[in-house]
Length: 562
Image (cartoon, rainbow, N blue to C red; front, side, top):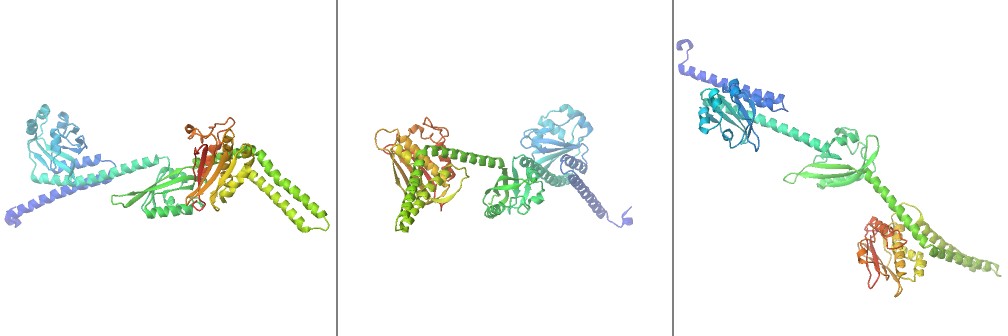
């Protein structure tokens, strides 16, 4: 067909032909990218099909009959071969190593961030002194093209394609395959990142599922985002239901208001929280848990999430309850033992008001027989009888309190009055050992908060120990001083004696369980005393008294200071 038949000049026809070729190349490139995207969507968990598809389409785009290879950056090791379309002839005689180190011939080529076109590659290999000369003769490599794979200008791999004969690639072919590789690298990197993210999530899930406790991940506003397997198994509920923990009954109703207050304040302030709470098992049983949460912040200090750990402490809680019960039993045994030591004193203290009541009752009888009858004298005598019996009753009540088995009971009481009661109870023991008891109590009434019986037990134990220690002193006065001091933080109680004192080498051991210097002692008295004082938020210690003897001191917080 000539110009007259088409009505088109040769130049125009040539331009139209070029445009058609360019359009065909663009369509082929788009088709190649579409193929990569399809395989990416169909194989989100496996990179190998994506590698193979990228390399196949690159080879076809630039008509590289010799095939090629795709090399991925292998971190510190070099470049590792991940895909290959080498021709059967080359595969039969020459297979490149699967890993090329950075300082190798191929490693230096792959490290380029720009396309590298080598028209006569066999000659280049000979000049570089590379091995495989026999392979080059049997299956020569004519022209080679190396195209880098970049991500944000960082090298992530390289593609090598070639022709078996010397047939240089055109600039258009190089441009076409370079643009394709650039777009394919983006798709590959997105897939790689998604795969890495999934692997990271799997690793995180495996890690938190392996933690022997309940792990929660919370949003900045405190909403539950994820939990580990143990939580789902314990509550028997899916994550969607667990998000409503404040209303779905998994928290014990008695604990809910308190922990909601702590949790809400912590989330609002960004401060870590900690509390103990009873959580309901799927079978209806409640167990105690220790719950702790900490915020995680980004570089600007903004909270991005919270991590929470809930640890089952039911066994520990029950063990502590049993321990407290055993300590209470030991304390009671100690009190009963002391009551045995005070038997003579107690019988005297009880007999005295009973005898007085008997005398006053006889006096009332005599007044009734008198003529004329004086009812005023009778009433006075009977009032004395009532007072005497009340004294006896109070003494018996104090003995009963010291001996009965009862759980610890905290109350406010006057420490000075409690000390005075003990001095009366211990009077026979102090008199028997010839001990003079003095007190220096702080002025006024100073209430403390605690178990009155237990704290009196501590003081009575210290008084009896001091009296017995001074009983062995043959010379010098036997003096016992009980003093109290008070400040804004609490009360200091001291029991000082003038006995032989305590060997400095044994000061650290006198409070150890079963340690005693008495032939008939159990070694439990002072150990129990220290446990009682610690339970009341105080401290008990021993030291040397001046000029001689020992001093035992303990502190207690004020009732107002808790």
